[in-house]
Image (cartoon, rainbow, N blue to C red):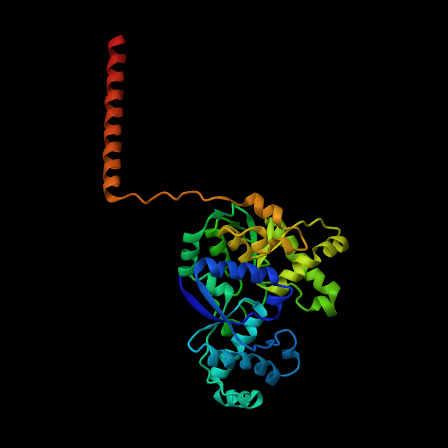
Length: 335
């Protein structure tokens, strides 16, 4: 496909979200997508900076945009992390719409960001209709009707004035991609609810209550697993499922996947290459049970084939009527 992005990995990509990294790079290799990592990038401050002040929040993100503008001019910045996407996108919009504030931030970071960078997320990049079509062409296996609850979390599509998401309550891009790979995505109510985020550190019980509701709603709507694009959501769901079962007297055994892990598997990755062997909740068995050979699609009927079919059907109807008349005539003779 030969697409290229200036790549902002974010902190989790090289740590808690390593399986996200492995599966993302596998997909990029399959589809000939070039990811040019921004050199000397810094944490975007997504989790903590907004609680300090706006200048810090925008300075951390804008510095990364300025680096990309210099290193990879004309390439969009793409990031896999939902929190990073929210922070970088917010900085993009603010520094484009408010030039005086951009000047202020440039003075703080001692750089000359010109406001030319466009920011996108890995999820948005891979669910572009052209990209879904390209992924479909490269599939080696299909997901065998795996029943999936697609979980976007609270930051992927909100606020709408920043993300330009077409629907902040019922986004469907992840479903479109996974359905194209043979999954069966369930309709459920908590796809954009908060998982508790960093409150799992400062208010753990309240945060686990929020996470439990996500598990419950996914389960009662028939999901076998939950799929996300957010490293923090993935960690909170995957790491805390056992504790939630203990506290709430529940019995959830629901793997949590990054959407890239399942797509990588469908593109031919091994469990290790896709990263699914690194999970807290065992994720390998369900995925390998569901993966299966591609079902060949029927070729669309040509005009000549359609015409021939209609002639055959007309002849068959005529023969049936003649047979019926002959049987009626025979019955009258017998009478």
